[in-house]
Image 1 (tube, rainbow, N blue to C red):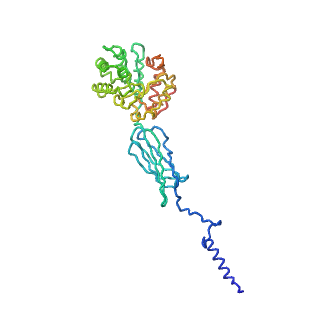
Image 2 (cartoon, helix red, strand yellow):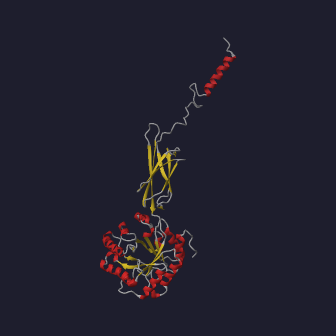
Image 3 (cartoon, rainbow, N blue to C red):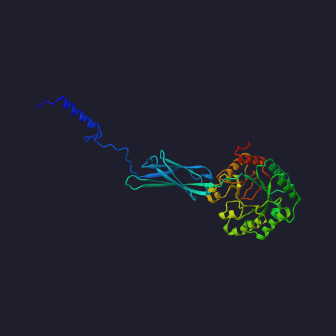
Length: 401
């Protein structure tokens, strides 16, 4: 047998080792399998997308800078960086595209359409010749018009000669000039044929202090005759004058669509006397139709106890968010303490409540038994109420009670 040269043996071994190290010669992994190529894209069999922000059912102001974020997974794992995600909002014309990073895509959102908004996030992922896998997520939020400063609307259903309440009204308005205070004057339930000197004097002092006055007129939830309503309106301007009366408060306003035509006529009648006259309608609740927003400059959408106000949620009637806060009012009685009042004022000012004209009082009224009169005097914390509204308007912490 011929001997193999040591050089040939060494070369053979070295070549075999080299081939094995380079993965050649039909070899594979140590267990005989072929390892996956990390550069080969994974075929998407399932794609999921969900909103991470903003918070669902939250209320924001038009023009607020918001971030829309959506989390995307492919086959249960975070989507590859750079995966495109399309965002949109309805109603409106907003649309934007973002790409994922660590599975999350984010775009800036500046909504311009007030009311209920449905946000959408859509993604489509494909690989090679396989069909694309798609997914869409939606989220509901609400946008309200940019808010105006809170005002105070006082049901001043007390006679000037009954005490010092009108003087307190005037002094409170004078001491808080940054807070607009409007008083609802109510002589003889709005039915009178002559001006009372006591009212003329009290109204004059209040207006001089910076306050505004609207005249009380009841409408019987649409059952009172238009002639009677118009006669009461005329009396305010004829007997007290435009220099004292800057609007009309329509009490017992209906909330039914069948009564709209009458209120439309009343509204036009008042505005014919002066386009700047403010018409405040009081159904004491949210009307059944949004059309009532066209027959009043302000709607009292809440008039009840403070315990009920704590659960008030305008999101059940989304059209309220198409109205600015200075077109909505809350009159809250049975607000027992100063601390309760401050909490109610802060709630009213929140985007959720979206109220602009507010009044809280500790006086009590039982609507079931019809016992009590919450408007027979000012609340014990009248001064604190004005100071609290002023602080909330300025973004300050309300003063201690």
